[in-house]
Amino acid sequence: MHYDLNTIWFVLVGVLFAGYAMLDGFDLGIGALHLFTRDDTERRLLMNSIGSVWDGNEVWLVTGGGALFATFPNVYATVFSGFYLAFVLLLFALIFRGVAIEFRSKRPERWWRQMWDVSFSVGSILSALLIGITMGNIAWGVPIDANGEFAGTFLGLLKPYPLLLGLTTVALFMMHGAIYGAMKTEGELHDKLRRWSMNSIIFFVICAAILTMATLLYVPRMAERVKDHPWLFSIVLVNMLAIANIPREFYHGRDWRAFLSSCATMITLMALFGVDQFPYLVFSQPNPENSLTIYNAASSQKTLGITLIIACIGVPLVITYTACIYWVFRGKVKLDRASY
Image (tube, rainbow, N blue to C red; front, side, top):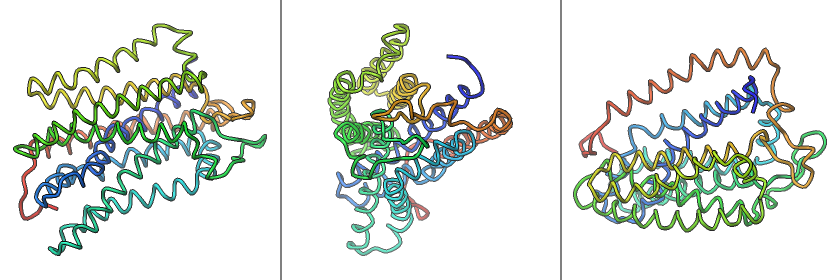
């Protein structure tokens, strides 16, 4: 790995998307778990646990997409045109999730709240599933012609491996959301979320184990770099220790540390994905020579340099804003007149 501007931007774009997955991941996880409780007060508590941060978390997705457009425009064009229908569905899912949060408690009627409860939960699950399917297709490979254009169909994206990665992503976000909810609530709902956290950990571990075996058997390319550089197995080890530490922290009543362990789980998973994918941004299957890499799909060196300067100014601002919001709204969730 040569640390030139192309590699730096590969890492930085990965950091932005990893930040989105880690932050909006628990939002989507809360949504996926939302219908498991039928008490109106508990559902309001779940929504209000993310009510002050969910829109700020999506800034990371917008920033990541903007960075991808500025630094690797060919990838942006190929992926957003080839995955057009999937991204439109993702956009609608994210929109309906946000609308549901804002509209649910505007009226007291049961049918009204149930309608938005379903919208919130379905939008969250569909968003997580589509994100995982997209990553699964990037790992598996998509048909790209000699001009760098997508040559497949929407149904062609629904292969077993991407669907398995989509299911694993849903399980991961459910685990992450349950742990965050346990950290933000108290009483009976807190106890429920702790139980859901343990169940979702089991669900995620099963999905991850099956996905790992499928990757080794059918996508061996995604494990070659770890095989060639054994020290990279340390990332896998940290990931396993982070997952194992979650129930340990719960046992000692340290919800905050359990949440940090969940964050470490997501960061190490994204790091492994990036390490194994490098230097490909979009792998072409069945014609690897048509793949889009950090070199043949990048902007000019001048553009990469200017955008890096802008990023060095903008990213710390985003991090500072995010940290301030979480500090202001720290502590357990309480319902009042201003709550959702």
